[in-house]
Image 1 (tube, rainbow, N blue to C red):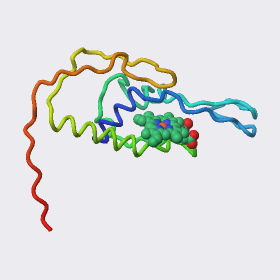
Image 2: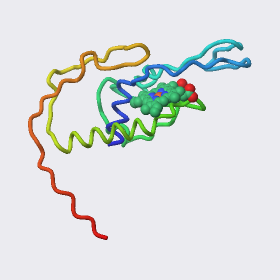
Image 3: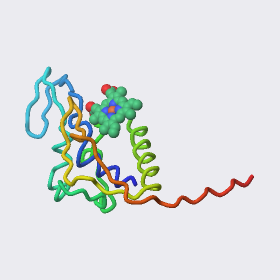
Length: 148
Ligand code: HEM
């Protein structure tokens, strides 16, 4: 489930950009000299689509997160450093809970192929929602009685 959620956040990062950082003293970054007062922002979307890190980056393939351990500089749906998202653990927990609840009860398929995401302000979201067709209902087993 973690690999599935990571791949979802990689391919269509909800936040495409980090907040900007203000350079406070002269610094060199990837061969660029940055002067104090310069604003620098990370592009999460471009990072997550680097072919050297994510071959066939437009392909949804959760297995990549099982085959390789990505560093905090290679995968950053929640930004990084001191101003990293404070809601990251809650967001991941919510995603897993919602997915587990739905897929443990229903079998579904996409109503339309190739749903394209759309920029909404600073976030990326499905252009028209994600319409699904319920193709079956899973039989739920009753939870065993708790023993004291
Ligand atoms: C999938 C869900 C979410 C994503 C992808 C996301 C992503 C991000 C990103 C990329 C940043 C900027 C980090 C940086 O500049 O390094 C951020 C900041 C922040 N996020 Fe989230 N976030 C999510 C959910 C949440 C939730 C659930 C909360 C609160 C409960 C939250 C609260 C915040 C706050 C307060 C900041 C600003 C942190 C600061 O400036 O110190 N986020 N988030």
